Length: 166
Image (cartoon, rainbow, N blue to C red; front, side):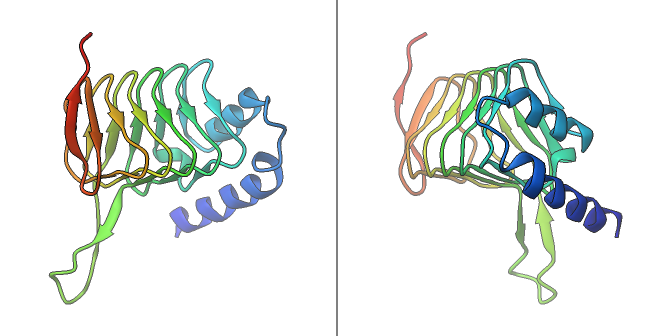
């Protein structure tokens, strides 16, 4: 019940104070998220049309970015490393259902996007996945397994197409 009440309060604040705040007011949106338990580092850019389901399960390292229309569906924790970017329309999903069980229970697992990684526009990252440091997930890709550091992955399901020399 407390979780549902928290979400109702959050979506009220989101609808009236977060969603329609001017684009440059990143610190205001970070403040609102912190009021609901998010851990948001300095200089984060979280845009007003970003959708965050449960701020209390969000951790953003400094200078992380969540673009407009990105959706963070996070019944489980989502950790965004420093300078990580979640682009427009990307979807990070930390929950699903156990379809093999008659009761169809909800299952959850965290998502980690490590330092300097980029999840491009309309990409989907599923529960339990870690995107390695410095990796790039191509636009529209569907990530179902962990991605190593400094990798470029594209497609459905996402597959490694290139390593980035750093």
